Image 1 (cartoon, rainbow, N blue to C red):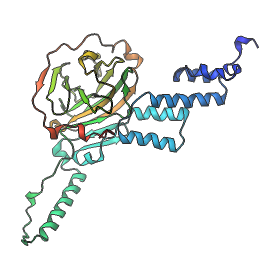
Image 2 (cartoon, rainbow, N blue to C red; image 1 turned 30 degrees about the vertical axis):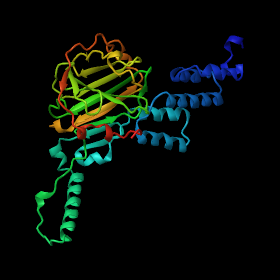
Image 3 (cartoon, one colour; image 1 turned 120 degrees about the vertical axis):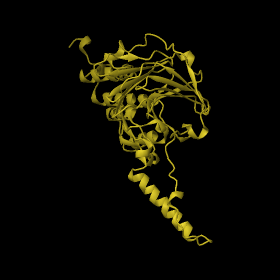
Length: 352
């Protein structure tokens, strides 16, 4: 056998250093070519999985809990990388939102219902019965011995904020790109009721957030710089009939720019234009793709599923989906935002 035909593992321990320069795709090819012995390949897969964990931020305690469970179960190497690919698409809407009509339907999908329909959900009815029972018990023991039970005195409190935000579990640090796609389905016009967007986060010690949102049905784009600050809105794309499934994409570029894509069956790919990084806060450190629901504006049920999450767009969209222009439309202020309607404190974020 000639020296040029020797496998890498014949070079001794230095072949591990060569393997550490390989990304996951190259490592898979090298393993298939038997460039590494089984022990070295297993070690390199372990290191690749740990690098993947360290290279992206996690949102909230539930995502951290998943990783903790995988560690306790000694899931490593390629198996851990497979779990991380699933976790990239995972969303965890709070269970407390279910009585309000926002519920998880799978690890990567949710369904939201109009508020009037949410009132008829079993969860909401159960809450109503419990509240009524508590009120009756309280009235029965009242010093006034008032036995009149006014059924209209009960008021159902919606557990879902007016703007409900559900971030994906794994985001991207500044300097890394991020691409996420969602398929949206409804049986009527959802207008601005559903958005895909990005939560831009400062370093945790600063505790700052900014939201950038795009409604695939109405084509409008919003930005909100801080809690309680009025939103800014622009018409990024023309409105469409969203009674048919729509794919909406968000891409965060490595330098921190953001743009959106919209794809409908039988129609060309549409792009919103780029929000360049210098139009966004300089304190940005982390980016999380997020599903947003304007629950008070929903008139029909809407279902959303995360169908893609990765560092870049798929190959079929890389050329067609590149930002070819910047958003140039005028931005308009969107009234006042009441503190109770702000969604920030309701997000499952480890900072709070």
